[in-house]
Every structure is written in C-alpha cells, then in structure tokens.
Image (tube, rainbow, N blue to C red; front, side):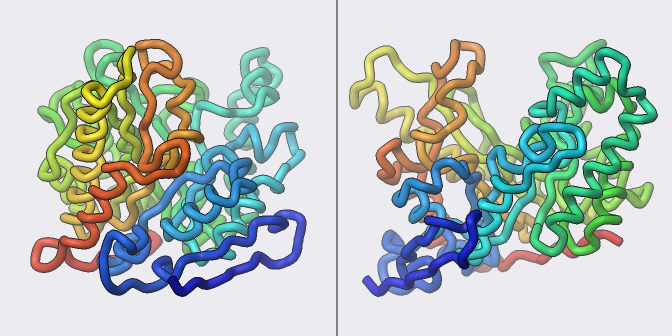
Length: 393
C-alpha cells in the first residue's frame, strides 16, 4: 500500500508524534473495507471524529489509527477547566497544545471541549463559591474572563466549540415532574449564564461554530414535560429568537445495549427538527456500552457486538439522512482507553464497557464495519453532501 509520512514541526508539544498515514486517509479506490472512515465520509462532506486521550498518543498504534481514520478530533480532557486553569490566573496550555499540534499535523478539524460545564472544575473555583470567598457577581466575571481567555488563545484554530454542556436535568431526576436547568452554573448564576456564555464566546472568535451539547437528546419523546429533547429544542428556539449565537446542537449519543434504543428514522427526525431552527447538528460523543456478562463466550458476546453495531449504524444513518448533520464523533475509539471501563452506570463500576469501535488490542469490531459500510454504500437521493454551517452574527 502506498504510504504518506507526515512529521510534526519541531517543538516540545509536538515531540514524538510523527505518524505514518496510509494513503486511504487521503483518497480511496477499490474495496471500501480498505478505506478509512475519514475518506469514506469525505464523499458526503461529513467529518468523522474521535475524542483523543493525549496521554495515549505515545502509543504508535493509537496515534496511527487516530491520524488515519478521523478527520476531526476532540480533546477528551486536555481542554477542560480543571486542566487549563488549575490555579486561579495560572493557565496550563501544554496538554491542549500537544493535542492541537497532533490535529494540525494530520489535517484534522478541532472540536473544542468544553467551555462551560458543571464537572471537572478547578477546586479553587468550586471551593471559593462554597465558602463565600467568591461572590455571585465575581463568579460571573470569572466565567466571562475564562471564556474570553480560552477562546482567544485558540482563536482561528477551533472549528466547533462546545460552549455549554449538559445544562438541563434528566427525566428520572427532574423536580416537580418536568425538565428544568441544573448544575453549578445555574444554581449560582441562573439560566442567563447560557446566553452570556455564547455571546462571550462569539465576541472572542467570530469564526468558530458555537455548540450546545447534551446527552439523551438523540430522539424526541412525547413532547411532554419530561421530554428532554423537546426541552432543549424549545430552549434553543427561544435563545436563537433572542439573537443568541448558537450555531450547532450537539447530541452526545452515549448509548447502551441494555436499553431499547432508536431507529435511524428517529435519529434523522431529531436531526431534521433541530436543523429547522437554523442550526447545524452533530453527534459529538458516540459510544455504545454493553452490560458485561459474567461468562464471556461466543453465545454471550456475539449478541452484544451485533446490538452495538446496530446502534452505531442507526446513529450514522440518522446523521447521513440530514444534510445539516456536519460531524459524527466517537468518544474514544478503542476499548483500552474508554471512560466506560471505570464508570458506574448503575450496575457497578466497569460493569458496562466494551463501548467503542475497536477492541483493546486495536482490532476493528462489527460496529466499525457497520458504519464503514453505511458510509460506503449510501448515496443520492437520500444521502447528499452536507450543508455547511456559518457562524451566527
């Protein structure tokens, strides 16, 4: 196979990240099974991406797959507040810049993750609010300054920013039987922080696409008070009517084969309904975990792998059906580095795992082949090239 060697520029952040790319990362002919996801997705104008564990980039196989298979990347943790500003006023850009160097070297667009979220905040911030040493008025100023500093630092290098993440409650954890707002920022600043965050991000970068990102908004329910997707739809509609510059709605799409998930038609319907608001859509954190059986045999594992492949494929088909769905990002691509390995989803830490496209030893699963086939074998008239989104002014 013809190969292309790409080497990062000199510098500490870029050291030891040279990767040899297969030609299929750039163009493709012949058997679609030999073609990368990024090459196949390019035929549809779609960007296919992954979250990147910066610490894993020293693994040459990890780096090879990350570089060759994906056309957009998201930093899994390197761009979160606790990492970027671990001490007040002291910024640690190094991990994020290492990630950015990798993306630049391999011609990948970057999704910035995340500016405003209630989790992974630095202790100086949460403890200061808790003990009263940071007032509510001061907190608003801190949020403004942080957004401005981070977006300005990366200005011109970010394609999509996850500006506000997971701002609303879940159906099973909603007071008074209806979806509402939740979390540290709402509790201290009220719901107005959402509009503020988007406006501050736009002021700092006129070109980046600005995203509202959440989970469990992959399909609409009954439209009632516990329909989270409907709540987010109404929220975005209201904010856009106020001139708030929301460009993209990101559906995380963290799924589990334990539950009855969605058909491609349900996914497509949600994508189209959000697009009707004038925004683009993106699947931003796709993974499909499995409740691991006590005895792992062919009889117990094969049904899980097939169910997982169906869910990955349903999401891809739903995205392809909407020309406004501009990216499909998996939240890590191999089981060895998946966050699900240690998380407790209710059945115990690590009980639900095996969530990604590749095994821990980097072998592609049925799920990989399923979305590869979706990209290879779909086309007009149902699947057309993407409609680019332009930043809201």
